[in-house]
Length: 197
Image (cartoon, rainbow, N blue to C red):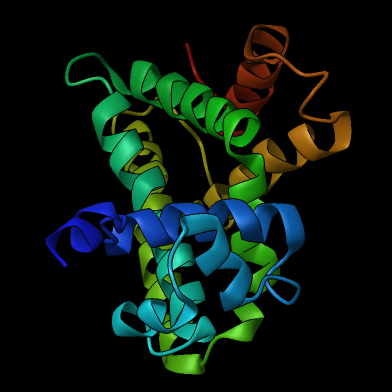
């Protein structure tokens, strides 16, 4: 009996979420089944329900994980020192890199958020707003220091994020490198905030 227990894979929420994210990227949320997920993890389907009551709750955790990882990655990447322009350029570079490396996950959030209930959507929107808030804060500091001239901070921040993500989609993430986009996109973003020298 002890040998049987040792052979079973150890199952934790983070492992389930990681594999579920990959399957949802490959197959889509609607096509992915809990049985397929269990088979991929090497466990019985019933054992997944110990961790998540259902597929929808698993999706909520996948989307939360994607947004939280993005926010955490930015927190680790952002420069501790430097001026507003350094922070601004760092954010642009970070979001470009993130969109190239994890574009599928970003689109997963946009595409599959409709499958979860309204209360959970509100939580995800708040998590996304924290990320947007990082950019808004940088822009606000730029305005305070009279480096940026912006009429509507919220609108500009949302437009910039959409533009940065959209450029990758439009050009195809396989053909795009961070290096090929960094300078032209950084210049365009600086024009959007009307950088004063």
